[in-house]
Length: 273
Ligand code: ADP
Ligand code: MG
Image (cartoon, rainbow, N blue to C red):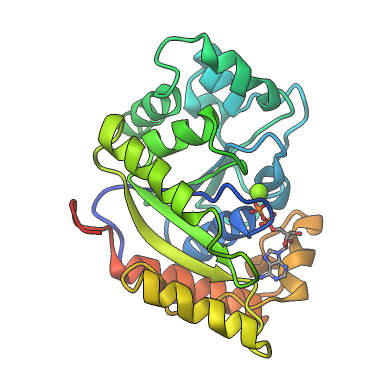
């Protein structure tokens, strides 16, 4: 596997879009695996009560498994809930369990309710001897307190956009929310990356959507597109990323290339948009 340039500091990237089914989890998991395969140390934090990222990475997330819920609500150390992925020695996951479904409500009455993940993650990174190169946070499809916690903990936002009808619908709402977070809670937050997913080159619509998004966000859109591929959608049921499940499939190769692009571009300069 290709060796990629390592970031100087841990890049914390939240994968977000308030629409469901646009490829957030698939992207978080497969970019993480792609970077791990190419030599990086990577942590995935599953912040969606559905626990799809935990499933896809093959880590335990039964109701009694220590999870991100315990970190956010019960002040448990992040280090004590991190699990190793069975796929790559340098890939780790903080799982989500069913308890996280209640966290959105429980958070409301807690102090520092927007900063809980950020504080736990900073503490974890500070006390590590061999810190991660990348942390990906997989968000639920909403703009509630869990997603706000992800925005406050991260420096970068990666928005996956599905190459279909209404792709851009809701995007301005998302960007407005990110601006509000930047203004009030996390001045370092930047939309660094947009990734076009589930692309089908045979349809005019997909090509049109891809062109539209490139016109609107010329600096953020990766040149790599993720094709619609059965192998990508099959992999999670084996508890694997597509990188392990079928390394040479089109989906795997595109995630490896997208990961390489993210690594080569490096962290955004502060203030760059
Ligand atoms: P989200 O996390 O935004 O809800 P997912 O990553 O779970 O979205 O993807 C939604 C569905 O689409 C899942 O069933 C997933 O397997 C499938 N999917 C995602 N990306 C692709 C792709 N490139 N090709 C085929 N199916 C995909
Ligand atoms: Mg998801």
